[in-house]
Structures are given as structure tokens and as C-alpha cells.
Length: 154
Image 1 (cartoon, rainbow, N blue to C red):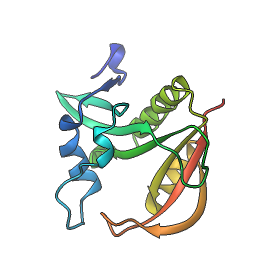
Image 2: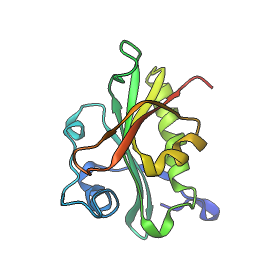
Image 3: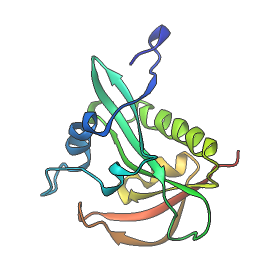
């Protein structure tokens, strides 16, 4: 939704309403035609979204899950970050990250982490995330990824 003065507003949407955007952005160029995650059924899952003209144009999914590189640290995982191709670079992804960080702090998480595509590492680094560990090939996309982390303390 667009708020007062044309500013974009972050809203919560059910997973069913973000699947099309996930597929269009995150599965483009892959053999997969779905973008459902096992974590979509987690009781604490939330989908932060920006909606324009009644359709989501940016989405990110957040849920409590321990980071494999930081066992025992209360953490929230960010997954399914997708911004419509025509709007990439417009600040919508950054808006979703900051809203998700607020959410993670509210849950008492000390860390937010994601399995980031190597092609998106610069985006995450600009938002305060650190690239950690060895790279790997993500199964659904067959693309190189790294784990990125960001502490929730400001």
C-alpha cells in the first residue's frame, strides 16, 4: 500500500498472496515453478510486503530459526526476499529489511540471517550484513549462495 504523501507502507500478507511474486523473481531462469517453503507453515512466520495497485511488488519472509553458523544464538531467518524486477534498486528491499530487523528485535532475537544469492551480497552488505562461511550451491536455484548475518543490537 502507498501511505500518505506517496510513501510506501509495509504490510503483512498471507503466504498465498506472495507466491506469484516469489516465483516471478526468485525462480526466474530455474526449472522450478513453485516457491513454497517448509517454513511457510511455521507458527511465527510473517511476510512483510509492499503493495501497489492491489498487488505485492516486494516481499520478504521472516521466522524464528537458529543460524547454523551461530548455534544457540536466538535468531530469525530472512527468506524469500523478492522485489519486482522493474522496482529493484528503488529502496523497497531496504525498507523490508529494516521492518524485518524491527520485528526480530521485538522477538528478542540477537541475530538475523539469510542464505543470500552471491549476486545479492552487495545489497546485504550495504544493509549491515556480514558474509560468513564458505559458499554453497542452493538446491532449488542451482545458484551460488553464502550465509549473511546481522546482529539486531543497534
